[in-house]
Length: 533
Image 1 (tube, rainbow, N blue to C red):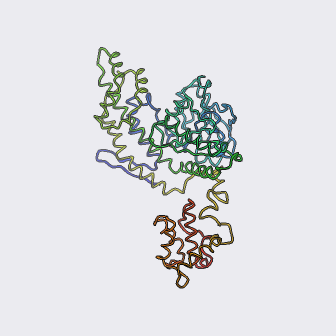
Image 2: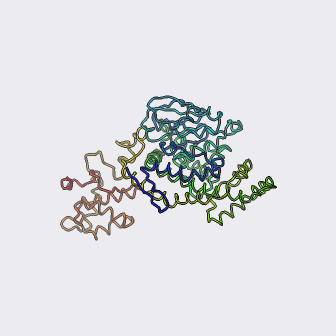
Image 3: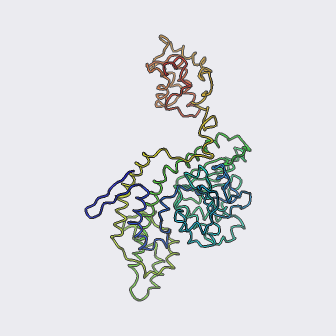
């Protein structure tokens, strides 16, 4: 249990027992009053509740129909979940929150949004049309002990997207995006067309690029040449929608428990799956930091929003011409943005979307807006300048005190240990299960080189070995590490076995594998193994 105190001559000390409690209290006492005063919740996002700070990390899956979203969840958990439907047509017509529970079952949307222990209470604002298409599937699965997964309806294309869903689909996804830890966009290697609805959804997620990952699924169904073309086309399409200079991380593979149709790229798929699994497994460990980061983003937006609302209030006449002035202010909102930027030295990227803000302001009563209240702004500035920095220290302490947190169970267990673990028996791990020393296979050719170096007392010096090792053209930093690993007895010389080992490690590196931090037992030369024990 950790705590920290904040003392100021004019303020009472604040004591936070843990990160979650600290975030809740900072929000309630310092940020919420500013949001409430300037109607932040009517424009941007509903107020946060305790469950938003206490809930497990969440993963949101988004994609067009039949891209394998539900199958992906099934693959991760290695278990069916209530309400699951899989098929080539748009089968998942609901938002399904897949969460841990001792008893397997389904909680309907209307019941879900009144449960104070679940982080979904504010979804009731989207009405019955949405709530009838929202449910929670609970089951006792080890994967769900660490994370929750949100399955979404397939995004429609062609004629299908013209049919109204009855609720604002993009707005619902944006609500989830603000609260989840990871957003995974799934694409089918066979159909990369990004429909109007999908394009609208991706744009709605534009403020959450740091949470976004892309999966190119069903990649085993096309050849290597086709895969290169599909990958290039996907990157080009995403580049037009996601207007950032950074490239979104794309994972390529076939995420289900079926044989690969075209196994040419098996190694690539295995490496990509391992990278994606590692990314997901790290979510519990980084959950507190993500919530802290989201609170900072929210506070920055709330500050800007307060400046906008108070500026509009300041410009409004006290008696006559209110309607005409309101229209004028909305039309000139861009100029107000620029004025606030210069006055308060705020980055343009912190401002809300201009067009969306103008639309929302049209239905508001400007006479009810509040003037600038410096005390409220000072509280938020103090939170960002002092409290957050101290809370960051507490985050690090809690991380250090807790055992390594990661997602376990399901598909995550299948590649962790044993011969099917990622990279098992490759690179420096080659020969790990063999009785014979793996280096002995190529030792005769290494011995020929060794004896041309005129060894003295059966050993070559570092200077002599260096000349030969430099022929590999590897950097000195890499060759230095290879020397350290190969000089097993640490006498500054290499005998014939150590020289062969050095050449074996050079080959491992040249083949694109990483060097081990410590020499594995199966690579120790036979004559040195007694010394190692």
